[in-house]
Length: 164
Ligand code: HEC
Ligand code: HEC
Ligand code: HEC
Image (cartoon, rainbow, N blue to C red; front, side):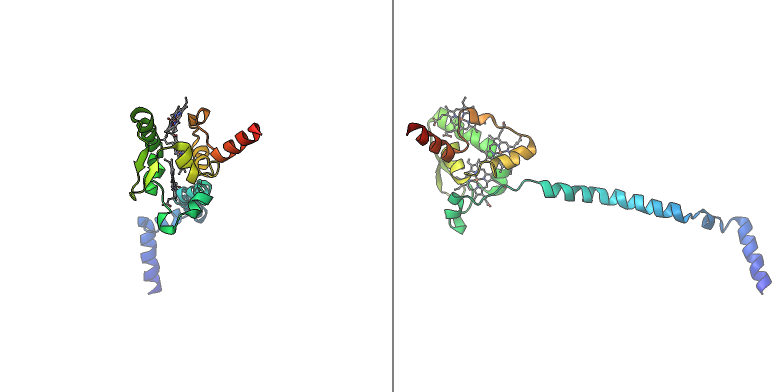
């Protein structure tokens, strides 16, 4: 019996049945698994690093805190503002400068005065921790501030001091 068993094994060996077994090389397999893991995990690990650095604009200004929970919204819904605030600002400018219109009805039917300084930056009075946190991250420098004031309160306080 044992002999026959050995014969079968020998025969199989000759046909190369056991060859694949010899090709397993423990070291290479482990290296392969590590490389595969690294490739699969890379996008994930890479994004973890990025997500930690993504800007978090702060919306805890005095003007916003004064609003009731229900009213604590922007002039348009947040996802819209995130993507389209620059278009909205251009639209506001055109309506004020070209059509002498100053009232804007927001998505909650509340009426706002179309003004970068007096409306947007009244609520978002933390320019550095809000607007600029995103802009620095995205490498953007809006050219508005040669004419407009991005920190109206500080600017006004400075003017008062000058007059004294
Ligand atoms: C009445 C106060 C108020 C005014 C006025 C206002 N905002 Fe907002 N804004 C908010 C609040 C509150 C949020 C957060 C909204 C939310 O969580 O739904 C916000 C959100 C945003 C966001 C999205 C931020 C993010 O992290 O997704 C942008 C961009 C923005 N505002 C820009 C502007 C601009 C530009 C103007 C002027 C055209 C403006 N806001 C006017 C209160 C205001
Ligand atoms: C959630 C992030 C975020 C916040 C908050 C934010 N911005 Fe922006 N802003 C951007 C991005 C991103 C762009 C560039 C978009 C593009 O180029 O398509 C941009 C572009 C602009 C532009 C156009 C700049 C140009 O030169 O074309 C203006 C103006 C602007 N933002 C004003 C503001 C003001 C004012 C605030 C604060 C009240 C603000 N933004 C808050 C992300 C943000
Ligand atoms: C060369 C100077 C200059 C630059 C640069 C400039 N503006 Fe203006 N902007 C004006 C003047 C002048 C008015 C008219 C003011 C008024 O009638 O109240 C105005 C009005 C506006 C208004 C409506 C009124 C108000 O009080 O806000 C908006 C909104 C506006 N600009 C947005 C922008 C944005 C956004 C940028 C940058 C992308 C920008 N402006 C760059 C000069 C400028």
